[in-house]
Length: 462
Image 1 (cartoon, one colour):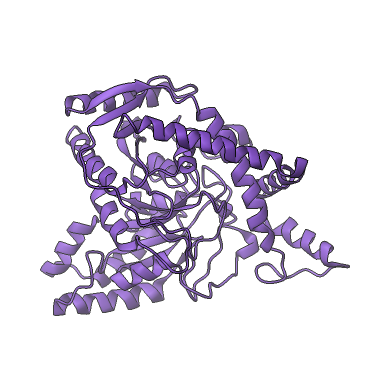
Image 2 (cartoon, rainbow, N blue to C red; image 1 turned 90 degrees about the vertical axis):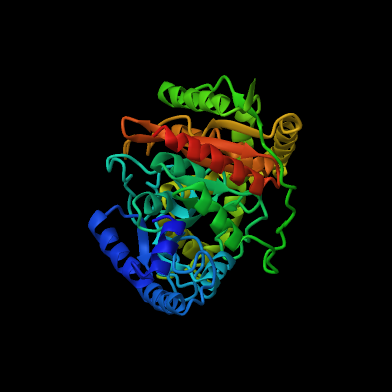
């Protein structure tokens, strides 16, 4: 199901894009993992027939022509339902295409459907979706991670060759770790956010989930680049260079010993491969969690104010006045976790004229400067993707503090605006353990090239 193998099969006439689409929809129905909210069968078959004709003529559009993919259901596709995993948008039809979908469509890639997610991308287990819990394909009693859990499951279970998700503080990398696939968060501004529903605008990043790093690089090259619709784009790229000096985190509080054991094995592997490893302390991890939570909740409070039952979304209520209508629509339309974050963010914005929100940006500057200082002496950083292994469905759903700890080792990369990628480091009792590599700002291509080499060596050891 990786891109290169599928392309070779198409070119050799062993299988066609239409055959692949047929088999995928059958497999999605049989597996019943709840990783999709909406299947785009009309779009998929139309795109597959066109791709099949191009392969027969030898008129191939790109290296992703005919390759099946999925989209997290917070990306817009014209004429297709976009729910964000919420009741308040359960019947909303997108009026335009997101830039990332438009570029994939032009490349000939085939949209299989829209993936399930934590409501408005708020969650770390894919249990907050109005459309139900997504199941981890490695063990159906366990969560797949979140918020891009449906995307991770669709790749891990081979329901799509790759998926596009969103990463605000780890929402691509953490489910990639839980499901044993690759999850890449590029430097902010490398992929257009036009058509991505905003959660926290200063941190939201379009991410990519694949079976291997090589596929990730192919998809990244397809969707990256400037976009007139997104003023935050930045196409600066660092020059190609060797990334040989790696720092690792020696002491990781609260981490599961099973995760640490696998992490230490990976670090030993890196040393045998010839990398220079030196320990560092990430003394800003606790600060990064404070800054991340304050910023995301404040920005979510503002961004989600547009869902009022007047312009679009849930519109079935009447009331005595406008406030009454707002209360009824938002009260029924939003789930528990979304309400918790909106209320907290609203309070933080009101308290002393947004003092805590302003303070969070000072913390963010400190974290960013600290990360920059680290990369003055090192080329890459390696650390676990998650503090713990996948946990059972329902085990932590009523414990927001433990849920928020899921982002402890990932959020700082969003705050510092640096690229980060999670790959599968192995398994513990059949549950995947992810390892994360973080690079210097704008070092996306170098990071992908070198982590590809590392991934190949890890796979040799099984």
